[in-house]
View 1 (spheres, helix red, strand yellow):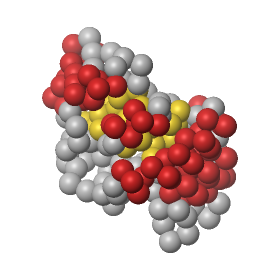
View 2 (view 1 turned 180 degrees about the vertical axis):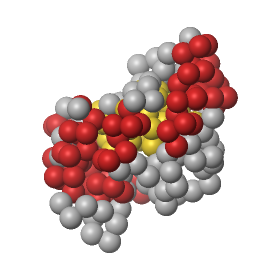
View 3 (view 1 turned 90 degrees about the vertical axis):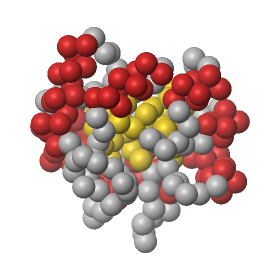
View 4 (view 1 turned 120 degrees about the horizontal axis):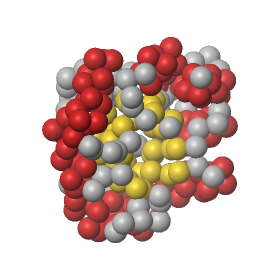
Length: 205
């Protein structure tokens, strides 16, 4: 599983970044416009959703549960300071994807009990796109979380996130996680579309 988290840079808008990811072969897109209002996000989300549907990609909106319900996006990703997962599940029902951010095994337990569809777990290393997350997990952190999940019978996809590059992916996948999410590593590349293809190649090897 490869998730792309939208981002903007001096060179690319949010929609540009999503087009790049889709053209490079990514089929799971999260529109993340932190600190933007629902009204600011809505027009971008409508176009992003159209691009995803044309490509057969899953479309997730960060944080805004009501917007997900309004637009009938595939789902929502909720950070630790966003709406609780249980409340989102109650609003959205069983058919929407709900992801939750986790840094510890206790977060994972809580999200699993609340009805999360998957976990975005990190950060793998320090990243400038997410603020206030700790601890940095590294490979040992993922191994420890996955071992406890297995021991406790918690079956939930775990997606590693946070400063991940293509070179990191083989080692990260060996920890037992289900996939990775990234953003900056693709957009900083000289040829972002080619870099996305390279990332996918690292994931399937």
